[in-house]
Amino acid sequence: MTFRNLRRKALNNVMLSITGIFALMTVSSLFLILAYLVYNGGRSIDLDFFTELPKSTGEVGGGMANAILGSAEIVGFAALIGLPIGFFTGVYLAEWGGATFSFLVRYMADLLNGVPSVVIGICTWTIVVRPMHTASGIAGGIALSLMLIPIMAKNTEQFLREVPRTLREGALALGAARWQTIATVVVPAARKGIMTGAILGIARIAGESAPLLFTSLNNQFWSNPFHEPTASLPVMIYTHAIAPFDDWHRQAWAAGLVLLVLVLAANIAARWIMSRGHAAVRG
Amino acid sequence: MTVQPPVAAPAIVPPAAKLRAKGVNFYYGSFKALHDISLEFPANQVTALIGPSGCGKSTFLRSLNRISETVSGTRIEGEITLDGEDVLKMDVTSLRRRVGMVFQRPNPFPKTIFENVAYGIRVNGLAKRSEVADVVEKSLRGAALWDEVRDKLNTSALALSGGQQQRLCIARGLAVGPEVLLLDEPCSALDPIATAKIEDLLVALRSQCTIVIVTHNMQQAARVADHTGFFLLGRLIEHDRTDVIFRNPSKKETEDYITGRFG
Image 1: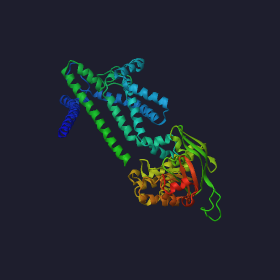
Image 2: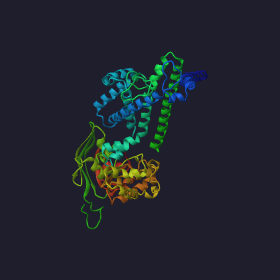
Image 3: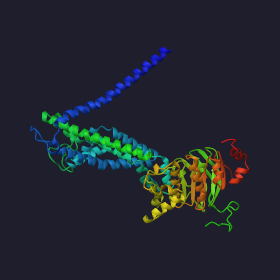
Image 4: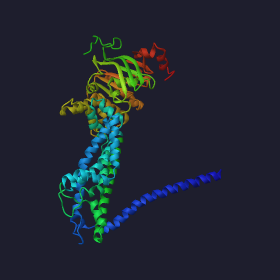
């Protein structure tokens, strides 16, 4: 009796410790990356990084101002294209989709979500860059939007489905048409969740380098993102990290830190919006 | 509109039917939930539908404004008329504007109190911008809620108590000027005081519209309804004046249910 109990208690503690250790490993790996980036990036970052153009090969100093702006432009294009398409696809899936067609669309979205990002880069190169005869910021934006669409669609669908049926019925029972019900009651009720998903989706694609390698390429100077190769932070990190110059490595760390801070800020903002969202829905 | 006897004595001479169902069958997929229901709802009277859980009374109520057809795989047969017009062929949005509904659980929109009541007016384009506030006030007064919320019209409707939320849902329904108001167990989530308020309200609202209420609570039917229909296993067993149903039912099933022998 007591022995059994002791054994059960001991086993309980062992299992608890094992799960705890693995949980600790997960958390510590994140903190390790963070600490390493802050240590290396923090030493390298200065005002020049945000205001100066990259110096030519071999020269010391300079910054990545053009890549910061370029990333903003490329991600902005991706958001302008991907968020509306993804949003309306999600609305269709949640509200209208007939069984067969919805299944197809959902399946395609899943597939698109699973396409390796480097493949998306090659495809966009074929479809956009070749006909345009130049890499450009907009081509990079299109490549990233292909990654954003399925994320946004799935997320929108999920949050719309969570809106209680009774709320839809309440609007329909007042003589609202179906599209009115969706536009004035269902989507507003899911607004916070959808916005959160949009921010997380953007944060997710902002760090992608592979789709940009073939599409927006890179640039040492300011550029017109509509018809010139455009610099971005992820590609800058890549080119600087593989270069044989210490000063470029320094810059790559700084760029990594800036990117990470932006993504973390987006995550925190998303969580903040979401926590307010639930308070509002539940009263 | 309807032919009223010169001396109003509605309990003795029932006025003309506002809403009429004839031979209604209802299916969820292959399951037949309603069998040949024929029932008339006299204008400006309260009709209660009672019966044990799953007897089809809510399904029947939900087919009267065709909210039932928003569930996929359902099918309805038979005839439902509103002032002689075929409900099943009518434009569904204008039908639902004329036949309002209050649900089992209060379902205010996550908007302000004002916007909740104004919603139906806005989506139907029923009033000019300048008149919306008047209609909102009138509707809230009609639902006996005005005095409690007049100072906080721009706060969230979700901050109200359950009973207040349900009266807000009634006000929301009244704002579009319905001719018929359907209520699906409107008090099942409320405490006795909130319930009493809603019941008083229903009796008062009779003068404005025809009321159909589904209720689990037989005392409630006895308190508020002029007429009562008893449903059992998807069939309408008996339908008569409320006092007759409760004092002198003609079917044994009705008597068994009323006296609490089952259900």
